[in-house]
Every structure is written in structure tokens, then in C-alpha cells.
Image 1 (cartoon, one colour):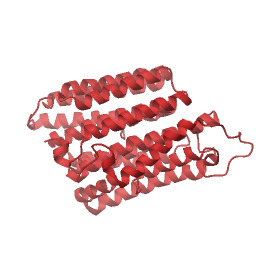
Image 2: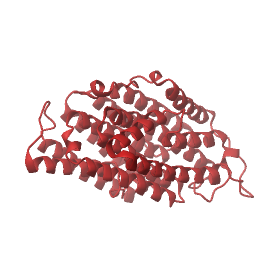
Image 3: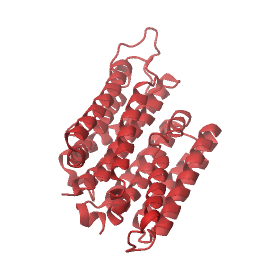
Image 4: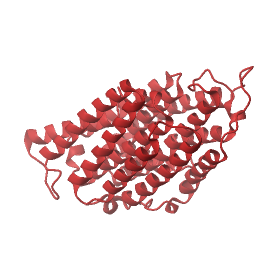
Length: 390
């Protein structure tokens, strides 16, 4: 059974559209706010490998292309910061070995393969669970993502978080539909990992003063909800995770773009010590607010369509207790986003701060387009190709 047959959601079309949109926006953004050397061709190659992989029917070739895109980004991150590159390389190597090895051992590269028996099934499940969690930087394997987000350019983080991570999450969604035994045999372990990432990511995000690091840990927090939707196993949970992954990609682009615009104005990394930026950069401020609300799942933004399905799937899988836990994690997420919005964007500007710089008109246009897109797709989901579902 395919994801489309199970949920009515066409992941290939939807994520292809999102990938190409983010690629075009990132390339324009880089023309006006300088990114790392060779960004233009790395972005094109990364997006190209991901898009081609989405449409390949052969699981082996699809996996190979995704791994190539991951190693390309490792090389790109390494060029910018060796310590971040080493951590990222470790995650990609170990995660890839476990995932590819687990899929090979479980016969998951063969179409129609059944569940392996006995100990083999447990080993395969363990390898896939740990491998994907390392790739996603889920708690307790979050040793690499904050370093990449802090020490590379904002569009580098977008390539890793919005494109690579979400493309690999698409592979996990596909696995949930084609080999449900991987989740069914260890459902509560997957749910426990999801909860650990939700609460651990939220608490770590709340502890940060560097805004890029906060966004890295908020990514881990959000991935916990996505994993929980897959662990629940209902059609609504899988659909909610798929829609939330698309929203995640778009919202993270907005959040990192806003931070990049602020840092370009301030000429230093954005922290909670900065104040009153919305008065000088109103479009960037609005983009950060919309990105934050979209991540949390506030209507009318696209994230709401995925998040309410994830809440329902949590209620079905774990009852009221799990739903309350999810709500508590969301409250923590609201807290760390509100703190930054209140202090950094809406707070009073520091005395003696520099005069407003002229942000590029095209950067502001990009941010406005993404804001409008998150609203329109939330109200009229069919406007984004493939974003259907039951």
C-alpha cells in the first residue's frame, strides 16, 4: 500500500513543490544576504537529488540519492566550520549505516517483503529506530544539529532542516505504510522517543540565548510530534505527520530567514539580548511570528491542519494522558517562542542602536510570499499540489 492509498496525500507532488519553492527563495535570498561560498550550486544539487529521489520507484536508488545529498551537505558544512562538519559527518555516517543496514537485513529494499521472524525483526526495528533518530537529531542523539545551525549560514541550516531532514522523514513515512511492523512491534518505544524529543527539545530551546540554537532545538521538539503521529499508526496520524512535515519545511525557512535578516542588520549573531527589531525590520518580525505560530499549529496557518490530526492520533494511541502530555509540550514551545518574540522583536530597542538598514526589497517579498502561502494553504489546502488527504 502506498501513502496516497492510505491517506489520500501525494507526498511526491507536495514535497517536490515545497523543495523547488524553497530552492528558488533561498537562491534569491542569497543574492542579497551573503551565504557561504558555493551556496548556489550546493543548493541546486541538494534540491535536485532530493526531487529525483522522490520520483524513483526503486527503493535502493532512492536511498542512494538521499545519502548523496546528505554527504554533499556534510562537505558544505565542513567548509564553513570543521567542528560542526565533523559532528554532522558522524551523524550522517552512523545514521546511514544503521538505516541502510536495517533495511537490507529486513528485506525492505525488496517490494512486497514480509516481516522477518523472531530476533531479526527486533534487530531491524532497533537499527531503524536509532538510525533515523540520529539522522533527525532526536533526543538523546541531538549532538550535531545545534552546532550546524549556530556555525553555518542561515540558508545552510535551511538546506539541512527544511530539505534534507524532511526528505528523510518522507522515507520514514513511506516505511510506516509499507512496513508497519517496524512501528507496531515497538510502538511505545517510538512514542517514548517522540515524547523525549518533544519535552527535551522544548526545554533545551527554552534554555538558549542564541536564537539559531533555539531554532535547532525547536526543530527537535517539532520532530517529536511528527514521530508520534507515525507511532500512533492511524491514517489520521500518518496524514498529520506528512502535512506537518511540509509545514515544518516552510516555517523553518521563514524563521531562519528572519534571523538572517536581523543578523545582517545587526552585524552579529542574534541573541535574546537584542531588542526591538520589529520596529526596524517589520517584515522580518512578522515572518518570525508567523513561522513560530505555524510551527505550534495555530490556525489559520498550514501547521494547524497537521497538528490537530497529530493530537487526535495521540489521543487514540495513548488516551487522555498522552494528549495532555502533548499539550504540555506545546505550552513549553509557546513559552520559548513568546519569550523571543516579546524580547527580541517586540521589545524596546536598545539605546544607541544603529539606524535601520535598507533590507532588500526582494528579501521582504520572499518573506511576504511565504507568510501568505502558509495562510492560504491553511485555509485552502488544495492550492499546494498534492496536499490532499482525508
